Image (cartoon, rainbow, N blue to C red):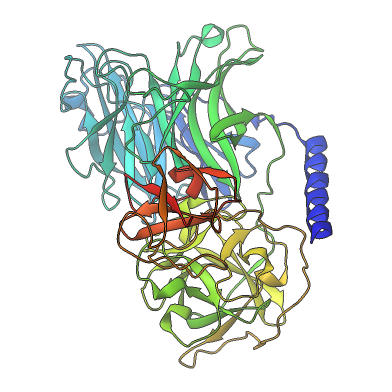
Length: 604
């Protein structure tokens, strides 16, 4: 075992050294002039981003596309020159026809583009509208109307108006859609979006960034959920002054989408907090307007910068950096290698219908632990017992992807918390149509398949090569090992090309194994390998004693090392070495089973 671990470590080290030598600064080519770039989205074989326009008579909204994320060219403006939606004339009198700082999101088969209109001819007036199309490559844009405006938004408690620009649209882990917006004046606010219409869901709003409702200098906010936290990226400093710009990006984080967002020192971004994560570096002057792209498990950040190689710093240009989370906070680099744009290995089609999915390694089947009906229930392997929690309904989602829904609950196989990391949990969740709920199949030979997530491009993997009942199922780089091969046995007479086999491989055919598991089943019992059975309805499982409140540290001095996190009959567990400790936080345990105020306990 020690030699095996050493081999895995040395293999990983060699890979890291190889990439360190190969990594070079990514330089974008072609047409890269861009200011306030939106989130990058892919439609078919093309990546698209949208930005502030180049003038009402030129291109009112800037649109760039690329086939490889490196070479870019201009596409058509979503709004034709010298035109505008009619509603803008009343809400933004004096608008010059050049739209600012759009953002884009894909919902229910359509792309929704949120754009800003601004005028200062009769006092500050601004508004955000939305338009939609079924395709970016062959667009048929339809304007859907106004989302928010200065004239309709209440002023802050100190009397400052809301500057309704700089939309940032994101989806939380429950599938709810939110929009952050604002610049200077009253603050940056957040409202919920109705995915069916693209418009505001209700009149509620939350202040998330600013100076407690007083004048401030934040703008260009965007939120991204990664590994247990929502990260709020936002700009400070002077924008739009070419090589004299002092723009820089700060960040705060929260465990809930609406905040509060705290910086590294614990100061709220609503109270003028923020930890700097990106500023001028050489010829990359005044970086701003963060956007996120998951490139097959690689975190990428799009920004604009002012070009220090020109006399004035203009034009603003598009840039693409790699983002890493280090000790819970984002860092960025331009020296990296892009993950492959292609999606090897090649996907294959499978028959739809109800199936039992069995592991080539163990012969055991994929099941929802304890036949749990709840969102967040863990997915494991177990001996076949014939239950509907061990059966899955495969349905085509188009373009070579499928949904997999547990027959007993109707809920979807789901990459939990939108993880893109090796070892990320696989759970069941209500079907929301998000990319972490779409899967593709690759031919592994002899009637077996690899099953890969559309979101992370990682494969279903029996954790640690377990052959035991309760062996956990996670996601991992596809290494073509037997613990990543699955047989489809169709129920109710559906034809299948999968070959039946009950043999269990006894050798490890890949060199990478996850070293830790973020959580076990969210339930009152746990069938994960080695985990204790939990019972009770109080703040602590039966037989467990309190060791810390939320935010504290649990020191494990005796017992079997299993620590429970949660309350009122719902817990997640994690193993800690005797004499060790663990933070009593959502981040440490990977999920929020009971809601605040969670507590930690262990069996002494």
